[in-house]
Image (cartoon, rainbow, N blue to C red; front, top):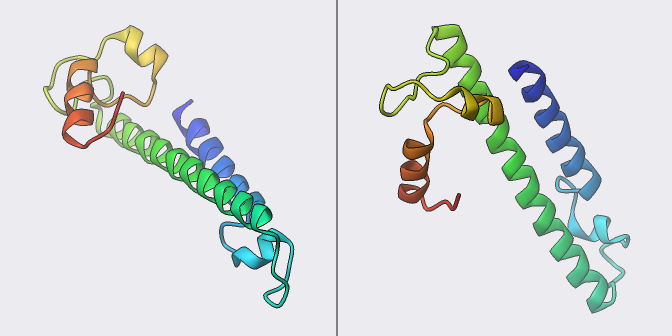
Amino acid sequence: MLEASRRSLEALANACGEEAGLHRPLAEVVGGVITSIPEDTDLAQALSDRETTDILVHLLDENRVQVERALERVREGAYGVCESCGHRIPAARLKFQPAATRCVECQSHWDRINGRTA
């Protein structure tokens, strides 16, 4: 299940990035060539869309990395054990978030330290 999730997240991130043209010049994505200047609204929308897609691709990639970490924990025989405090991760949490490598309390603490919101 985790391996399928990893592959799915990777494919989705690649598809989003390709569709949004994250790896192409902005002028090409907007629909013009460098010699043609799009209207301000077109450029503003293209920039906004590109930024939104870039954020989405980044989040999908972070989720993929988390799934890979959980798969590594499975291989090590440590899946279901919090990597921070060493206590068992409740089954309800793993059912809701199979890629979890920390219990809720340790994940909340980690998120605060790393400037992330839950």
